[in-house]
Length: 90
Image (cartoon, rainbow, N blue to C red; front, side, top):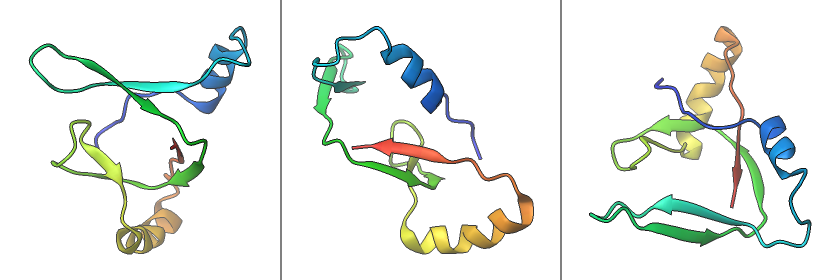
């Protein structure tokens, strides 16, 4: 699988140490238009550990795996031992 460039939970915790605990948290992403507009998304506060799958339908090249593909991957996970957890914040 293609490597996803992101931060770890430990890096996120460290980055938030000096921030105002009452500040609202948002997520920004490139809208994908000509001007590369940075759009902002609210975060609901839901956390979920997920499996990812590669997809051509996403700008990042990844999507949260559908439940049927996760079932197939569980067998491979047990055999290979290369499981990488991904934490999704919604």
